Image (cartoon, rainbow, N blue to C red; front, side, top):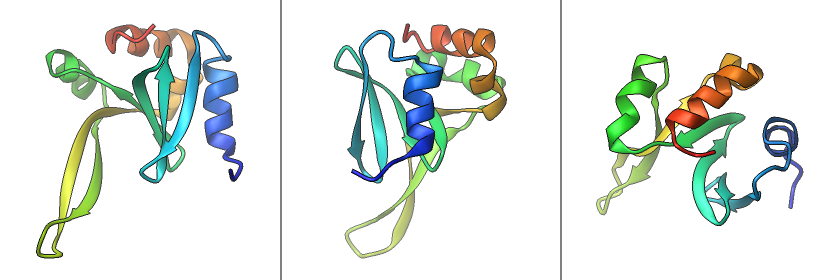
Length: 109
């Protein structure tokens, strides 16, 4: 598999190989797992956390936005789709205390 410096940074520096965090290439990005459960997505040097409907408002209020991608419909037209993964801004990733707040809110660790 091709090296991905941002993914390695997330896995080894941000999560420090803790709590059984693993990654698998899927859909053009990498899905992150904790103890076998999906909790995040890494794509285009961005980290997105999986969020439930009951707390997505908190993420929107704190400057995040939903993961969006383009998908072709049955007629070949491209349509925007979203998943319940929310962007973690770069400044949050760099601040361990604030990142932990985001992880707590997403109910991950």
